[in-house]
Length: 328
Ligand code: AHR
Image (tube, helix red, strand yellow):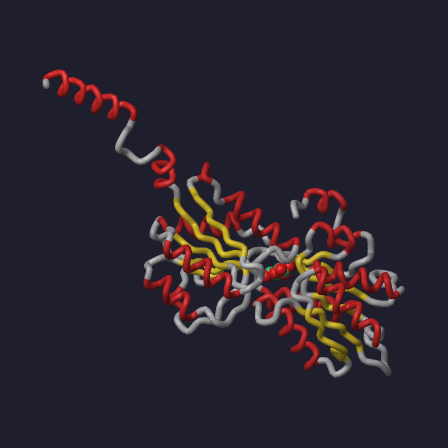
């Protein structure tokens, strides 16, 4: 019997030294990480890929975070499912980049009841109860649209006998980026009797759709002066369609091009004179979101809306050096 007890004591000591009965090292480390559930819109554009990278590069394990990212493939239902999984996983905080503005009330109530704080990133949500999220960080999309309009007003003179014909390429219907950029154009159209929006085509923020709708449109009309395209990828698709139809564009072309995002590829085309105006939409949200999370964790006050800083580019204020340094 004494031999049995001696053996048991030895076994217990080995267990204690080896850490038996405790959680694994990984679990212990995980426990210290701040877990963020991130519902991303999709991978529809170069902008979106840069935005995802910015989040992934910011919220790393080394920096004390675990980022659980779910790609919603531009479907709001996928976002609802992802957020409900985050609730079940009892994450510390949820970041949502919403596809569209409407339809979030019930889901955000569920998250609120679960006691998980929410940050709305990039676009916005239209909910009755503003207390359902901490803050909304992203672009001032209306200001972006107004910048584009002011450039058109200054740089595209209207002929005496003919209106300025604008072809409008819209992004995802109901998204803040679409709603606000469209609002700026439609309000300008109301103000300017000598402007007309010849057509509004929906390209869903993708290059493939931009190419498709533009190709179809050009089959029955080629009479427009400027393309107001709500993102770079739709612009690239539209440019391909214009090339195939033999229509010139840019600085010395028949059609002028105004685009939103100002990604590296668009800036290069702007410097080459193929795009007239790039209105920047800054995708580098990661560091700003982290700053807000730190404030929240420190119990500090957080602003309701935080806009990221952005610029406007034409050939005149661009340099090759600047474009080469751009990370997206
Ligand atoms: O919400 C930001 C918009 O979404 C960007 O302009 C576009 O490229 C992206 O897909």
